[in-house]
Image (cartoon, rainbow, N blue to C red):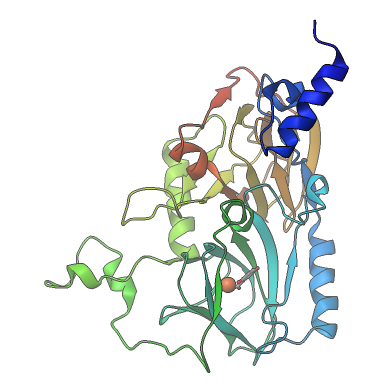
Length: 348
Ligand code: GTQ
Ligand code: FE2
């Protein structure tokens, strides 16, 4: 049995050599099941909306000062980093008529899910995409992007970025666009490429799919609702990257799901973290035994390895949840695990 004094002396010696003994490992660093500092939490729409409106009064968007009017969701377990989870930063952005959020690019990938307003567009690498409620628009890593508003009412959308993950890899880089506006490229409407045909000879120049229209998404949801439902997620679909057949972005999967009137899903848990936005309807999600009641506009987070199940609280109206997941990261490294409880669905 070594005395603690001897161990201390050894530790002091090793410290000076920039090495360290494994005997100093805290057993808390070796939990028997995944453990996260991310806490379950629900943000009410009223708080988000009021914060955006107050910011609108006081914050002006202009080049070189505040380039985006953005409110981020801070997880109560991550107040030092001010992130929403350990992998994703979720924010809400408001742009007023006439404003331009100047062009830039960064190593973080982003997506936008549009909530309210008309007449704004995002330009991604020259592709001008007019935003409509329920649309999903991607900004893959390294693409130039600018937002501008030609309509006459406030425009609000969700921004999701893989900031904390890219930060952990220490590869954050950011460039402002050298000067002026990002030019819109004159080319055939990229939507003609999204089907299964393309102009002969243009194989290499197809623009990537960056814009998923709500009218298509909703139509697909309704089609799926007629045929099948997933026991844990209800009528659920992933936004696919057609170039790879894989998830929406290399680091983030975006999904849309419908809970039919009175529908309840069964409980499951997985090693990915999920953030949900109630796009339509109202419901209750039980996270590790604790009920979180959501209404349209609310956003909530389910930390990894937490049991969760959803219920639509209405017996008349469908509920629609938009969600984002870091599962592509876990899957890429063979770390995705899932456990389901086939018997759990219970009425609340
Ligand atoms: O709109 O380009 O919420 O660069 C955070 C960083 C939005 C954006 C955010 C960004 C953007
Ligand atoms: Fe950006």
